[in-house]
Image (cartoon, rainbow, N blue to C red):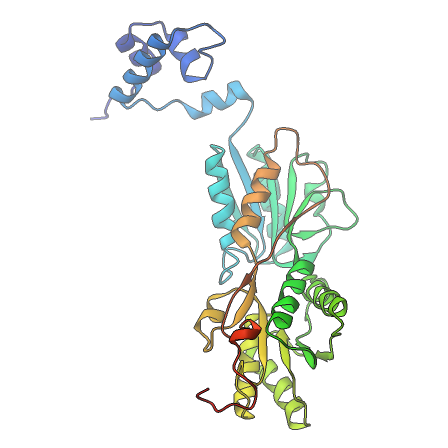
Length: 350
């Protein structure tokens, strides 16, 4: 037999008030309607005793809101650690008493169009459009004219649509500063080349590295181009070392490149950090697994997702322009401060 669903009338009857009074209290209008604290306390006690749950659909109709946010991404949910953006977004949505509806397109433009239409049909209170790779995009036509849309980890230079991005340039500066703080004064090389022409992380990280090094009087010596993978990094660094290259430091564009660089250095008898300081980007679990632990500038995925949701729900509207989230260095033994770095030329046990 189906159990009786507790209604607002049940709550009002138990508290000894009218249904209208109970409704005012549960909708936060006690002060406005001059309802006494004692009456409010009785109603809330009745709610707790009866296990009453308000009818969300009816409440949302009154408030002209669905209390839902749509998030559409390409491959974020399946990303090894980019999925942290969803964790941050979901937590921020819950904090605002909203439900996050997630749709992943797998990079299919038609699926994306259908998902956008579905979110709009559901009358979500806002839409977050996310990319797994920080990149420049064109805002999908289906989102044109939607008032509450925020881009996450991507930006459209031709559109005023607000965007939330990691501060990659400042991240590059943080990586270069770690190298300088380790006492490296020259022969600083960057390893990697962004394979995606629309991606912005690689160029911005490189720009930040160049700026910080130039300001210190120790310009970047050069770039060893390679794809963002362990194998390609190993080949690029190994080939350069075979030709007589000897770096004071390597700044790797991601942790996988850092791993390949470690392997190449070891194969050529070079010890990290005694002979070569190494710093990378991403702050992934891989950086913590490597020995010595790899110093890595972390991408603040959870913070990015949370800020996107807070922006789309801003009572004043999401506004325009780019919001940048700082990227912090996760310290590691591959780039210790100068006073703690083993002297070059010392024995392996030094």
